[in-house]
Length: 108
Length: 323
Image (cartoon, rainbow over all chains, first blue to last red; front, side, top):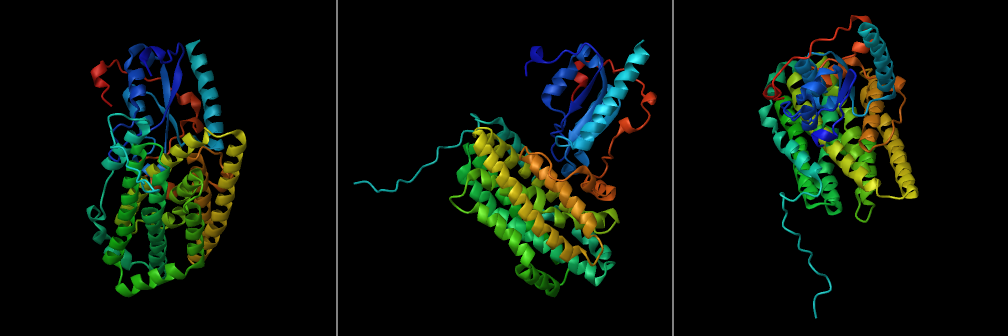
């Protein structure tokens, strides 16, 4: 994706990111996401990160989420496998609502 | 007069002109992940092996011969059967890598055997694998789908079910031992196999989805019905196989939950919804931790949300973002 086609969030946002690491963990964060976060304006709004992956990749499971959390100094809110289960979706939905309310109340 | 049958000469493969970027991406991932069993210090498990009871040893060897059979099928029949169906020349090349790695997997079980077991135990287990009706039934169900003339997308369904579902009644056991700090080097080797199978299941599932999206609604429905009915058939066999192996050690119910979880993941690889509801697919956390060590599960949300404090995003320069 070209940079000018990337979303430009105007409010705090949570980034959900898949993992594509090799056996050593290289290349975990997709290039497009690195490009997105390289932009200081876009990076400024990140409130948290959710990592996706597959436990079958062992220690690199959902590694992208952990790397982004560390790089951006934001909490790793959740991790889930593949496209997530019903349980994952319900937890993330409820968690994001709670987080949204909290961010609104602290901004006020 | 020319011969009636013309030899089809393939075009020379040009990796600088890709039709599907996924082919190169997966080729790179698979080649970087290449490994051989010799790299794992299996002999460090000899002492641990000696702490298992005779029954636990027999169970472990049997489980590994069952896995050997599945890897042998993928190596000699499964991956080669997918090659003529390849849509791009690069897909065909990736499948040759998959076929060879299945041979490495099949070979690595024999490395475990020669390190830990006696020839008599090994021979007995291979005989068992040839005579076990459930193991033979699952091999037959898959091989029928791979047969020449069958629908290429049905073959991919069978392949994904083998890679992402059928292995797991077997993979459970080394993960269980590892969670109890037993046979930990063997578990390291099995994790390398699991990692490879995950790429194979993902890639073949991806290729399935590219073919599936070109079909009419009716054709899609027919194929989806086929996938779920094959899953039911295999699940029935796996249940019996699991009971026969794990009843005596009291792990059957735990293994079945693991089967549900993996069946759902196999269906996700094909782009389909889960079959088993969450309450029967919640895997024992010790097994999950053995699958992906050093990657604890994060659920910040279920803690108290009020503890949330926004960290200051670090004011880094672009060059720092060398992930």
